[in-house]
Amino acid sequence: MTQFKKGSWDFSKGVIAFSFFDPYIEKIFLTLIKKQALSQRNIEVIHGTEMTIPWIEEKLLTMDFFDLDRAYLVLGAESIKGEVWDWVKEKAVDLEKSMLLIYHQENASFKKMKGLKKEWPIISIEAPKFWENEKLFQFLSNIFGVQLAPQIRHYLLDNLQAEVGEYVHALKTISLHQSDKGLKLNEVKDLIGAQNVDPFEMAKILASGKWSQFLEKLIEAELPFEEYRSLLSFLQGHFLKIADDHYGEGKARLSGYDQEIIHAKKNWNETSLRNILRQLGEWEIQAKRKSVTLKLNILRSYYQTQA
Image (cartoon, rainbow, N blue to C red; front, side, top):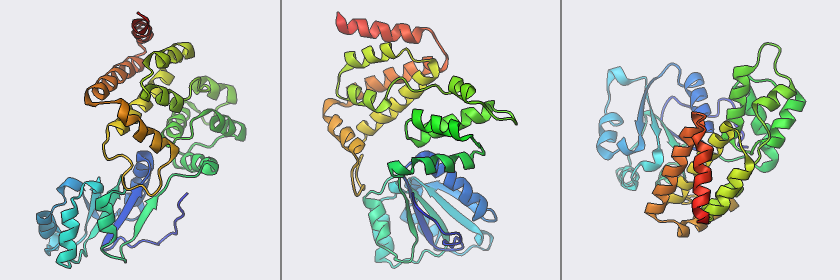
């Protein structure tokens, strides 16, 4: 995982850019940054699409006595048009006001920004290696104030997918149910059972167009509603990545998962993607409501493939 030194960034002026591999980690870091480094600043939050040349001229290149303590937080900074950075370079614009850029992907716009000023701190928060999952889990445990006995921690690490979202969901669930005495292992097992399906394997089957096989495995798993909800939510995220024509751009190295997503694009068009996302979304809503019609609908869909 990326290492940081306390006091290594100066938020008093100039541009600092962050690139995050995960939205949960982004939210955690933004909370910490606002609390520790920007607590005394007047923060204006904008989206990258709003950062245009006229906006820079108005907000960053003019002096206003009442804006001396203002800092700008730019979310979705990958949406800043490349022509904006070209203009900054051409005009030799010196951006002295505090501005924090948050990138979700390191695309062409990111690369242009990166090449402008060597003194601008640019920090890429990279996904941990597989051998660092325990460190990631402990970091999240500390953030959420959830202290676990070693046997509970090991159970969760063995039975949860190594994803930030899975860890966050489990820790929040435990936090809601534990008392001052904490929870016992059997209580945690009741709250967070071992996963009966591999979401990545299910995503691979469905993305390859094997609808009948996917439904058959879903029926055989006999999941509780909460696991249905988690799986269906994950699958929607997976298919949104397939639908993203620019997915993978800006990544120095594509993981096996990234390559699977890019490879799956040939199996889907705009209409079929819209249909599968609608179906998964409807089923997730039914799972949230603990509706008995969910399993009936999955069974009905499976029998339709056999007709």
